[in-house]
Amino acid sequence: MRTSPPVNGGFALLGEVLLTGVAVALLALPVLTLPAALAAGVGHLRRYVDDEACPYAALWRDARSALAGGVAVGLVALCGVTAAVLAIGLAGNDPTRAGTLMAVVGWIALGVVATAVVMAAGAWTPEGGWRRAVRGLRDQLDADLSAVMYLFVAVTLAAVVTWQFFPLLVPSLGVVAFAVVAVQHRARARAS
Image (cartoon, rainbow, N blue to C red; front, side, top):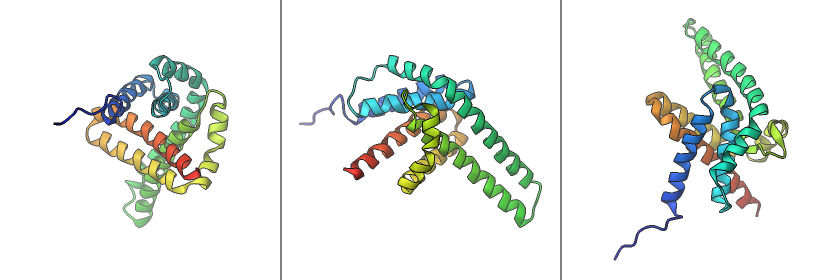
């Protein structure tokens, strides 16, 4: 006789990841608030995975706390994205190998900027703020390069899936937030 999966099992986690994606997408509608929205989503999923109380009121509180510095991070990221897109656009007009190289560098730069935003959002805490989160990016890179590569791949896959079918942006944001939590738990397990 088959029994149904436990309420707090994998399906509940999947549902929480998808609902977090909806919350992050709503909070990130003004594009500059994406870092704050991701920080709130990562914090919510971290509390959920750690089996702490994780009401959505805490997610909204985190989003409000992360907003001021998150907009500044969003502005800096937007400048990096603009430079990368400009390089990609200029490379499209240059059929030589230099143009191809510039396009590749531009695409990689887009991925690096997006991954840095995701990593900073994962490191953000209400106590530490954005300054500590951004300053800690180099430490994260030095501590676990494979974790950074996992996040780069997660961001890249989310971008490709969204590019293919735009409505998948919403669940992709939840999956990226969950990838940050998974990488952090992996690091904690390796340290133990």
